[in-house]
Length: 480
Image 1 (cartoon, helix red, strand yellow):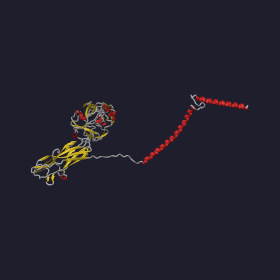
Image 2 (spheres, rainbow, N blue to C red):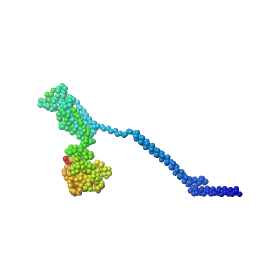
Image 3 (cartoon, rainbow, N blue to C red):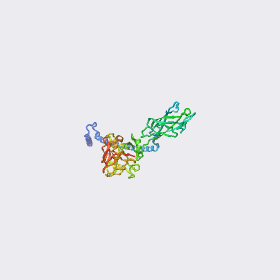
Image 4 (cartoon, rainbow, N blue to C red):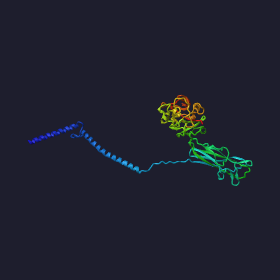
């Protein structure tokens, strides 16, 4: 009986276990379409769940060592950097080599046959070909002095057996002398000084005989001069072979453009009658080109001065200083407030559609309303001609109808004036950049406007009206 009861219990247990197993299998088999392990309740979704949990743990376990490693690496890195910095005492250095201007004055002397003069004057004794060569651009002066018998100051013709031929004296009614002259041969044309382009007695003291003045910093100093000697001897001079020497020396000065404030109209006329020369504005060191045009010296580039300038070097005396660049023209127009705008890369881009464009920043210069251009002397709608402005001292804004410094007179010299387009500032914007350029004059047109010089699609001439609030160019002129 007990055996039967135990067997019954065992049978019931086995049945419960089977049912439980089937129940578990059925739950998981719902998410499995095919299984190769029918009795494995963990071969599908359950496995994925377990794997997710396992992977999460693995990630945590993996990150922790990496984080520690990163921290150690960081500590090691900074420790290494600190050690390297303290140990490395070297510094970088740039080699700078200054090559001095080297100049040479070379000569090729011609040997002459014995001249039988018989009292005649010989003015065809070929002398030395002088060549000046410098590895810089600048000015040079050539000096000459008699050097007969290797004695400086000895300007005689000399014979060891017959004595000397006096220079510049009269013997028996006939002048005995030894003379020299110079002429340009090749290279840059030198100026022959002290009338030595004709025969002059060989000097007894060092005398300037030729010079070259560079008109820009890129002119190579390379000139060749030919010398010719002439001799007159009295028939009473003792027979013999006479020789003479001339010593030539050269000094060189590096070219430095003159300051605008120091340049006079006469200087401009002598240096810039056929081409531009470069000058400096002492106020900010800017360089400009100028040219002698129609009886006056004109800027051939637009002014670009900005910032605070002094009356010492400027064409105004009302204030000791003046802030040219009080506020930018892009802020708008104003009759009462000085405004200006110095060209930048945006303006260069805007000028790309203009003939001759795109212009550089230096070519465009700056635009000024009239309050700024007049150095604050005309900052209202009042009809008034100005005598003060932001030009360098000695220079001024051109007038409307005067002769040499007028915007009416310059119109016939468009090529020399080198006008450019670039438009005007109006209402805070740069307008008409393709075919318009305008420059202020000192002459009032009416209460709100000034006469201007206009460059409109290739035509240069005076314009009746320029609104004082607009931004226009400035070019200065010198008449003294």
